[in-house]
Amino acid sequence: MENQPSSGLAQILGPWSNAFEGLQALIVTYAFSVIGAILILIVGWIVSRVLGNWAKGALKRTTRIDPTVTGFFSVFVRYAVLVVVVIMVLGQFGVQTASIITALGAAGLAIGLALQGTLQNIAAGIMLMVLRPFRVGEYIDAGGITGTVVEIGLFATELKTLDGLYRMAPNSELWNVEVTNYSRLSERRYDLVIGIGYEDDIEKAQSVLMDLARGDDRILAEPAPWAYVSELGDSAVSVTLRYWTKTSDWWNTSREMTKAAKIAFDENGISIPFPQVTYSGSLAVEKETEDS
Image (tube, rainbow, N blue to C red; front, side, top):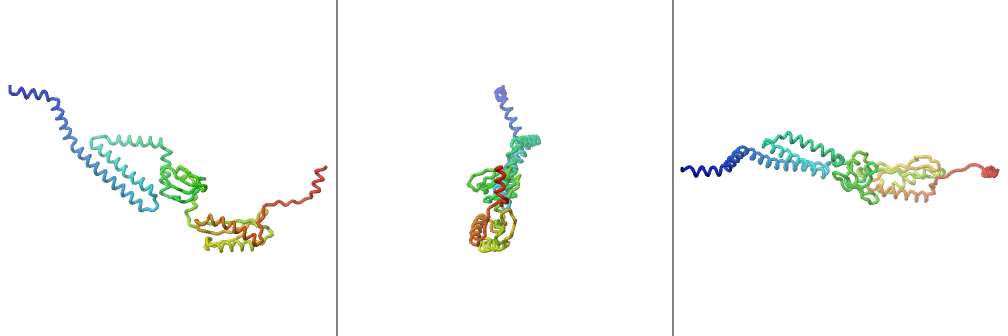
């Protein structure tokens, strides 16, 4: 009779007692898995930060890598490590990680196909920033896309045209074409071509052009300037002055030298003829033919 109250209490708490016992068994079973998962998360988080900072520091020490690529790659390394950590944590609880990896691969393939154009621009942007065919501040011509580079992004490149217009070009269009960089090299050549009359003194014209070249400090002594006859045209003899300047002086020098050459030729009596057509024949004969 004394055991009746306890047996009645056991009947009342029976379901809860079973649940508690099951919880105890669950805790005992997965205790080490939970502890291991927490340790993996902590260590993985630390490793991801360390590897990300290491990649960022290593790329910063390389002058050929653009700062944008440095930040992007360090973040990519960090999150790649975190993805591996999450898969390892799931493996601690008996989850089939092979299926997860397969699902991630399929999802990545689907996303890649859907964003094919965008990913192509990203890949081209990374290649542009790694190989650096042009930098910010340089004037380029890439398949007809011209302008001064303002910013190189992962998706597109911003440029400013000579007439002050804003232009944005997808990176894929700049990567898959021939790029002419007008600002990269420190020196540039210019050929000033002027036509003179056949009756004019060629030696004098060449001497005048050489004097102009020697008198301008922006024109380099090496390679030395050179004046020569480049063509015998229909109405004029083309005399060319070939000289080299610093790239920063090229534009102004070429325009000012053209003006100076015209003034110097006028002062020295050297003509710059315009195209003419010489007619030979009798107007009187042609008139009689028309009248008849």
